[in-house]
Image (cartoon, rainbow, N blue to C red):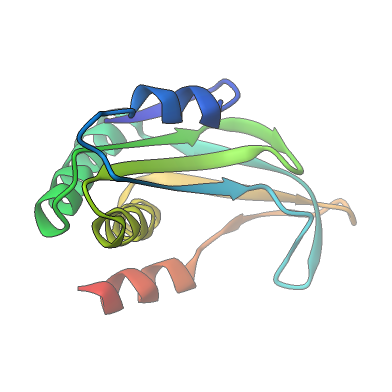
Length: 146
């Protein structure tokens, strides 16, 4: 259902694990490390997580999504450790009988994961500085979805 990984995320392999003959729809989200954020040129990122709580809360998020938007399967993987520009930092995949439920469940999962899970992001900048990032947009969007 949900995992924290220190290795590269393989979206094709994860998608294949969700295949179900009852599914008429599949929706996914990939979050990539970008080279610029809030006016800073970014070199790389580092993610840290409190894994036991992240797994427990992540399971709740996925169960809520599948209850709110009837789906067949959902999975989320979030990276930890140092990531370079272009790497996949988080992946969400959902299968359902119909596309609307798949889209909505996928959006719900990524928004809630970013808002509720104890996962922290540190950016390393071109100018030599670094800083922990608080995603206020993640929080406000998750609250508006409630």
